[in-house]
Image 1 (cartoon, rainbow, N blue to C red):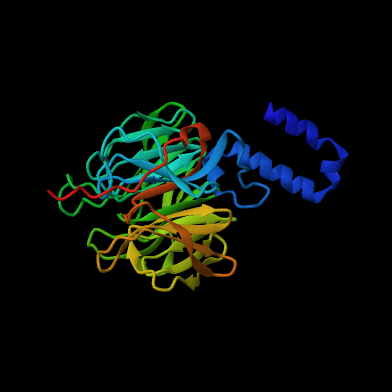
Image 2 (image 1 turned 120 degrees about the horizontal axis):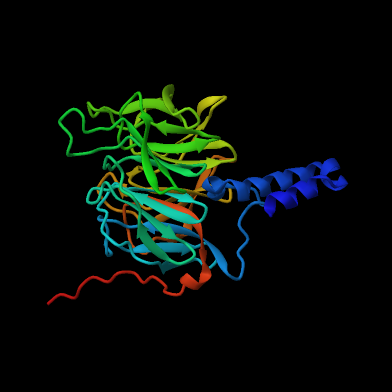
Length: 356
């Protein structure tokens, strides 16, 4: 129905002659026809409009390292500026798992406790279901949705022999068939990586190598041909970075607060530094063209509850008034859209048990 309507509309004079109309039409087409990229749209026209039924939220998957229950799933409503509790995970994934979105649903893979597992969260029904397991369990890996598939790349498997625990393997989960398949190898095996998509290519940034040294490599996996290459290098070797996509550019945020802009045509350039950042295991999402950074652990092992906003256009950061309900490391967080009916249980800050 959507395709037919678009085809009919394009035959009308206004859409043929008006450049703004054509741009808006193209944005609408991409939003509805590319569900794997839906949460990356940044323009005011494409920004999600909170309706009576739906609301845009930041979802945090707490996992094993938390002051709350390790199965808790909480979300922050950008409209209400409140935290809510969603359906809990059916298991404790431990730490160092990964998550991504497809359309408005969330997929979670791996982790230190349940590393072959894949689970799907349905944003309409507010429930989790188990999917087929990965062929090779992993943690500290990358996870990305492209077209009708989800890819897991690299990572760590403690059950493998010494020297081979850091993975090069790439697996592809077909959302339509519910089946996994081997899909390639990274030229540089790496764990503690970050990854993002431009077009149909997945770019993998840095990480730790099998000798435990930081890697500067930017690896590129072309999903069309199923091959990965060493594409370029970051300005310096690093691990535990986070990436977000804004307007066709990838922004890599390092543990020291450096913000590196990357595009396939231009490569890398450092565009700014977040002062006094210094943390690991923080979360990052794109929200209306800005990078939202949340939580993490500082070098003195103190966990953070702060939320920051970095504006790529002015290369500046500010601390937001909102905070996590409790200081915490963030192994996975995503932005998505939830049926407002499920935002009924406001999340209350965990209380410490009373002393006897």
